[in-house]
Image (cartoon, rainbow, N blue to C red):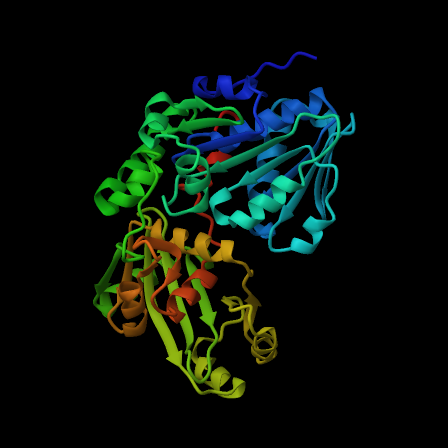
Amino acid sequence: MEINIQANDHFIDYLNNWDKRFYYVVGGYGSSKSYHTALKLTLKAIQEKRRILVVRSVYRTIKESCFSLLKGIISNYNLNGFFSYTLNPLHIRCRNGSEFIFMGLDDSEKLKSIDNVDMIWIEECSEISYNAFNELNGRLRALGKDLHIFLTNNPVSVNNWTYERFIKKANINENDLYDKRIILTDDTYYHHSVVTDNAFVNDEYIQQLKNFETYDPERYRIAFQGKFGIVGERVFTNVSKANDTEVQAIVKELSKYGLGNLYDGLDYGFSISYNALVRMAIDRENNVLYVYDELYNKNLITSELIASMNYIKQKHREIIADSARPETTEEIRRAGFKIINAEKGQGSVLDGLQKLKSFYKIIVSDKCINTYRELTELCHEKDKNGNYVENRFTLDPHTVDAMRYGLEKYKQTTFKNGEIKKPMGV
């Protein structure tokens, strides 16, 4: 069977190379690294009987990323006759016996049952732990097959384990990777890409990434230049305060377009930590997040917490709450609120923080004093070598956690999801 491949020039060598165990594919937003990895695996699944494990830190995120991307490629190459799908659980099977198995590391027990895997794709590999990577590497042991692990990621922090393992300890010069774009070692294929390598992306998308140079230089370095970031002291550098009257007027205008721009998150506390409810609105066109209301209290039993929340009760307005107390969420639901629990997992924490950092601006009403304080005071802790660590913080930010929960369903179609908006070549 002959397939007319549509691919970006910079990824042709990557598509054709099958000589290495590890493929470390890193680059800026929208560079098409995930698309070409999905294409590479799809072509191999047709050519040979393969058992391919596709992994992300949180299972919930796989359906609209890797699974949808693979389905889009299969459809656009008119290969639907070769494949079948199931949604519960997520699964893709090729008629020659190849299969794609999808798993999240938030369900480690299921991962232990996986056997005879000969290829693994770890999407957003920086979100998983080094121990999880070693566990996955150890599960790659099918007999009689060449074995491969594909790690795709934006080049987050130099303090992340992926940089330590694949750049520092491998004696790879970071600038050489940016210059040469492709580097081969004994066991690893390195590939670096940026959005301008993607011929299928429009100029507006590229300009949106360039805009980070003004709003957030560190984000510009990662998103547009595709270079590894350096974790600084402050977690957020995109926060400002505005007059409540002005913020409320903007939120009122945004709400005219429906509930799709409005988000509520709730973090639970009691004696030491606080209950924090944060209400937000998003200006999608300008990539600005507005925080316009907060509730911040402690030492309340559930009935008292519910009473304090009654002023926001709406039949169709959903609250996403801390998953640590499902019984409290259920009591609030029975009191007439539309409320669900957030996902669990460290990956979801980092993903949520990256989502907040990706806004050009977070504008906080001056009445939301606790939200503004925690956003501006939240800092990274240092390790024993004096380096800031991206997943350790100097305070327990209740309002920031509430914001993460509230935005869990928000899809950043302007940026990260740009890779799956157009299946062909993106």
